[in-house]
Image 1 (cartoon, rainbow, N blue to C red):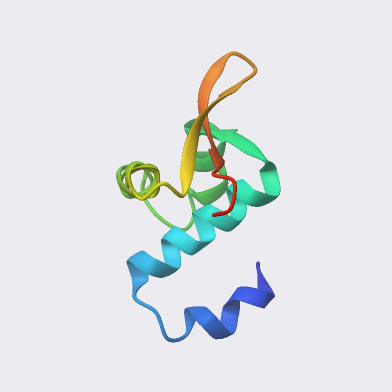
Image 2: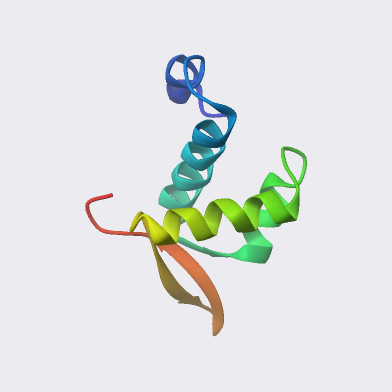
Length: 80
């Protein structure tokens, strides 16, 4: 899926790897809603885990709230 991440993911925890994938996805998408991310990551992990990851990334300052077509969403923070 993201071949450039594979070497780094081999030596990280599952949560760190999942957070890296979510962050990379949002960086590529520029901004996305939780529903968009859930549709993309549905085969990989549950909605509750995705919500936890998004919340943790917002708390860490890696993601910012964003409006996507009038719906609440997320984007990667500048410099993150």
